[in-house]
Length: 622
Image 1 (tube, rainbow, N blue to C red):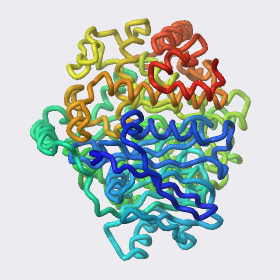
Image 2 (cartoon, one colour; image 1 turned 180 degrees about the horizontal axis):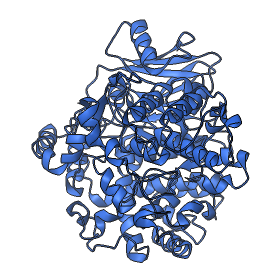
Image 3 (cartoon, rainbow, N blue to C red; image 1 turned 90 degrees about the vertical axis):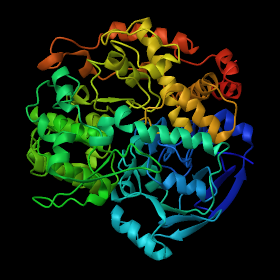
Image 4 (tube, rainbow, N blue to C red; image 1 turned 180 degrees about the vertical axis):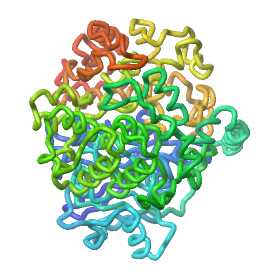
């Protein structure tokens, strides 16, 4: 018996209306696990180099991990991957909730979507089978109405649905995939790929058990987290994300006015504490998770906000709030709801709007360009209006739906200097001028700027958290350091955190290194070690790197936007910035530590060591 894995991959060709099931051996799963490992493997193996991300030949992959569906906090996640229409490189996003677990219970570890349907369709997966269903009546529906209609059509209110809204249908370059109404695979534009295939949704219903090798050991681990959650994850459990926004503003970590400024007087009015006090009506969770960090908010005036769509996370509060100069909490809640309805990534949406606001301020965009909208920083109504226009691709929203890199090129006249992105993906809400290691992580990330498979420098500045000592990370490193010690710290922590992209697990339950090893052993029955798990993650990181190299990315793409090489205009970071010379040296050190050559290309020797020498041929290596 396979523990933790179902052993089946569902392959669906929408154009040919052909469905098949492939069975993979246990050794394949142990080498690649799931999530990023499987996505990168199949994209390299099956995509032709240079394929248009929105063409039928791109493949959209939904994939779980060996831990998905086990009764343990953090296990309710899945990944979505494809060649990204936003970066035109490796694309991947994760989401929590219940959909991934249901896919496992339906008998599958992954779904590979190929081709493009002639007319809108959705996929119905149940009892180890799949059907392609007509979705013409669903096209154009927002998320809640679409889910209700699918459940009515299937006569089952318990069906789990992953889907796109109008933003995905209209192929907004940073459209997301929404499951369970308020859980989001947000980054890299996976919703646009789904829309390009005329695929509205994937509905799943399972009746199988996800078998684990040692249920008693897993139960003990789960109970430990339940007993200690208030101690080890108090703020997440109590407030969700965003409870430290005042600290972030004080230290300079909070993005303000398109990452330009350092003071935001309204910070306390848009924090997680303010949400709890004024608009929160509940806290949701994901499968089997005791952290329960998902806000649910309700607003009745001046906008109506439906709690079914959840509530804004920290990234949303900062992206649509402080970064746009908006301190109106109700407006942010409404904009977040609209992003959910349209299936838009809130990070990219907020950064794109803040970019447009600065362009408006500098005269690069006029009221004629914006359709009469006063797109000034701090205009809450304009921010909400822009979300709608992006989701509908109307007026200037059609340009902004392309993301800041493409929009800046169209606007020109210096707009490129205002576009805050890495490899085409908008930067998350943590400040590289403060967090030098995190900024480096933005630069080298295969998906463009990402804060999850990364470090937050202050956590390691005074002492090393106990959970990372098991990796051999023993000495604290100052926040502003970007030398060999910081790069070594970054490498170890990044590889370990990227493991969650393969398992697939959430980073919020703070499992120690040994506990995570114990979880994998308990679920799979494999006699795994921390060393093996690190290699699994490193293998997936190298495969994602190779995919990008094959698509034409070079070491020059491992860089930060111009803004971060200048100080903020005010506040704690008004006299500090990223040093380009130090960043360049850090890249060289990192490449060497990773076993890559001076151009950042993995060497054949390194790939042999990782047991993926086959990937060298994809780069025509000798």
